[in-house]
Every structure is written in C-alpha cells, then in structure tokens.
Image (cartoon, helix red, strand yellow):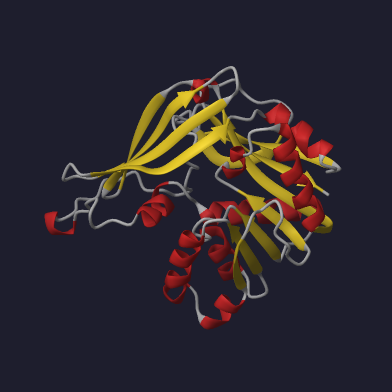
Length: 289
C-alpha cells in the first residue's frame, strides 16, 4: 500500500468530485482560518473514534467512555467523542493556550450545553499533566514525534501508563515508508484550497525531520508555514520497544489495508506483525496497560 501524503488519513466516503465555487465565495489567505483548514485537510475524527471503539470491542468487549486527547490542538477528536455517546467524557490537553481558546470560542456552535459539560480542555505539558484515571489516552497526528530522545519519549509513555485505569489502553499513530525520509512537497486539492505537506529537511544521522504545512488558494495567495513540525522520525520497532520499556504489557500494530482500485490505503486497520515495504504508510499502535 502506498500513500503519497503520510500526514493525511483516508476519509471514509470522501467525495472525489470537485464542486465549482462562485468567485465571490472563494477562499483566500486573508479570509481563511488556519485551524479550520487543518481540520478540513488533515483530520478524520469520526474514523479515529470508530477505531477506538473497534479496539475496545475487540480487546475489552465493551466501549470506552473516558478519553484523554493529548496534543489535542483544536480538540476536534474530543468534540467528536462527547457527541458520540451520552455518557462519553473527554479531556483535551495541549501546551498552547491559543489553540485551546480557539476551540473554546467554537464550542457553542459545535456542542449543546449538556455535551459541553462532558468536555474539559486543559493547558499543560502532556508529560506532567494530572487528570483522573482514564480508560483511553489518545496521541494522534504524530505530535509525540517532537520528543527526540529515547529518554524523553519513554518518560511521556510512562506518564501515559500511570494515567490509565488498570485495563486502560493507549492509542497512537505513526507514519513511515521510503518517501518519509525524502525532502519533498506533496500538494493535495481540498474543496476551496490546496493543502501542501512539505518535508523540508531530513538528517539521516540524527533522524531529525523539519516539516511544514502550507495552504494555497485559487486567487494565488497562500498561508506559508501555517504549521511547523520539528520532529524525530521514529520507526515502528523503536516505538514498540519504548512502549514496552515504559511498562506496557502488550503492544499491537494495526496496519492499513489496500484499496484494490486505487492501490492506496482503504482506511481499514487490522492487527498484524508484517507490513508492506511501501513508499508511504500510516499505522496505529495500541498499548495495553
């Protein structure tokens, strides 16, 4: 399975059509919100919540109710989670107060008063934040790659484990493939704008990667370097080893299947111990306490 843009999860049922927009309604850099653009082009919160339900039904024969979303950003997954079931609760944690304030301002439009009571947003460091014991901790969009040493990443993983209930699980994603180590730009059309994933620099000696997201618009304007990611590109063997060293009893990799027509990812993830050595892939890891 080959995926051109490892930052983007496949949206189930995503339309392939290119609807025409009137000129007066076209997006521009000046009239666009980068956080909204990110949610439209990168995230598929419904699929993430479905995956959590899938894993809990498979491994615990029940649904999780209490979720903590680390590196939550706009907390879009937390919002989706509390909408999913009437007894679901979510805590979104991010170190950036600006993006949390952005979400706070949007809550009245996205959640009713009862749902808003079941969502908590916390500013803090995911390595030290204290929350009630959680059934499921989520770390999506590879944000934990910002921890560049084994010690730093292991410390985070240990803190996650200590935050979980006795049968809790930690769900995180990872990306890789041969193209992940290249310096390249991958544009992709989204309704009303173009999303650009820019693998700007990679150091094979340290594993450091500097990536950007840019947004371009039909009028020629752009939001350049809307988001910056100064990461270490971790591999799946390293991540599995570190999760085990952090004390997790079992770590499982869920690999994405292949769409026979497009020969790209089909959005369906299943546990396996063998993956395809393709140009680009996305996988989930599930670590059980």
